[in-house]
Image (cartoon, rainbow, N blue to C red; front, side, top):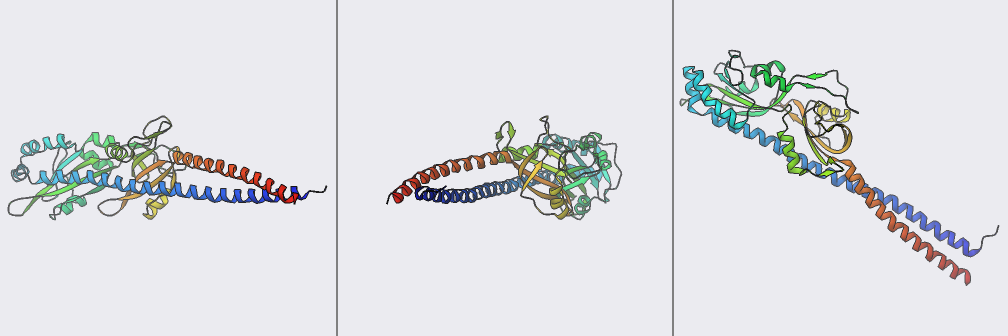
Length: 353
């Protein structure tokens, strides 16, 4: 079948227009996707900085409380006279006002003299504790520490019970044989008690347990994400991990409960806990994909003991990307139709000549 010159020219114009449309669509799609992902990743990096600030601010508050209490005359007098009643009166108001989960007084030999939540347990040496060791050397110290179940039990039975978390399996996690976590991550401070002659009489140490304590993660969410939601789900979430185990989080599971006891994905585990490097990529979090930022949490001995996380729900950004691409596709198709009309008109004019 012989194709007319007019039809041949029209097909050439159409092929060129389609080719340019497809190439342009692919380029724009890539540019839009990369730009949206880049913007989201830059945002979670900034959010992680805010999360770190909230975390360290709580630590500084505890440090300030312990430091100012350690210089009170009542503690010095109680240690010298070995008067527990005087010490109890001095510390009782502090525990109520500051919301500390544990508070312990230690003498100059590193022996526990008085535990506010568990007074019967005393007389044991605490020299193995780096906080106590440094405070006895006249150094004020604050930071993160992981306490075993036995150590938590000494500070109070209720504290040890609160720390226990059952492991819950989720998709894409690194498998673990540990089905129950009894250790607790704490924010802790210690300060020496010094007399007027500069002699160390003892140490005051105390802090808060982070297991099932949602103050920090909810404060991060309220500051950074302001309770924004997308299709009923929180757009932004924050988590504190003990190792790869979620011990404090506002990520929720399918039932709408906080996903305490779930674990981070294998890729995150290997990079953040295994190599000590931050992670700023998409990651599967409990039951959905998020654009995330993780960084390691180190204790006072510079060991990696956990992770701090913030994340943005990826589906919101995926919808944004789809809308932009559809908008571009609409204009692109409109342009191609106009080009097609013009091509037919030009081919008709050329054929006529």
